[in-house]
Length: 317
Image (tube, rainbow, N blue to C red; front, side):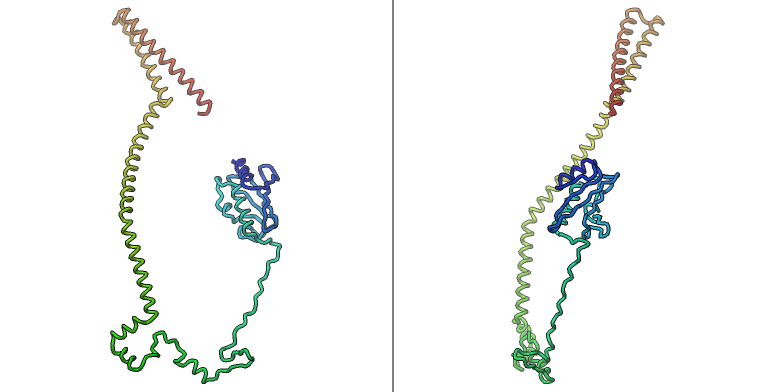
């Protein structure tokens, strides 16, 4: 695992220098036209423990410890596991420094110049192009604040007293007047466009309803088929487990031992019957020879199987 991690370092990065075999490596990167070096230290617990990356010279970067230069906040370091690739981690750090070149710690930061903002003089004292100053006295200020200078978005200033009275007395006339206002007409146009868009979206959704229902039915059918196949797999798996136990070497060995014992006992029974005078010589010889032959065959198979199992155990199977 350690060697494979070191191989990924050499695959994903250029200019990899071996400082100390299996323990320390050096990779150079270009940072804003200047070269930086990342020192990779692999502790005794690597790859179970994360590596230590130290950049030189020390950079001003959120990933870098400004005091020690250790890269401890890089995503690859924070999320490191035994399955991470050392080469990809170092490559990601190098690309970050190349794309967004940080400044060195010993490099002075540029101080932005703050220009004083020139505020315009009050409206009461504005300088004209000819150098004269125009002052607004109380009368002029009253003129600025007079109704003629206020916004008239409803256009009421252009109406006569009779027209205003009619608007005040007739609700239908007032409603017609409001409907013809430009900003009201603009809002009505926007509302019509929104309604048309909603209607178009609803029609499109209804057109897709059949396709959605068809896919939903297909998904339900596949789910049912998946459930049936899962039940079949479970049944077949149980059957397989039983067969595996029946045909396991240890189980076959036990069955052979039982069969050997049965054949041996049968031959002993034939001998006891002959000695007791319960069978003649011909019957005894035929049955005894057959049972001993069966016993010998089963005993040979048992011994052969025991030898094979012993050899497998020695081979660590």
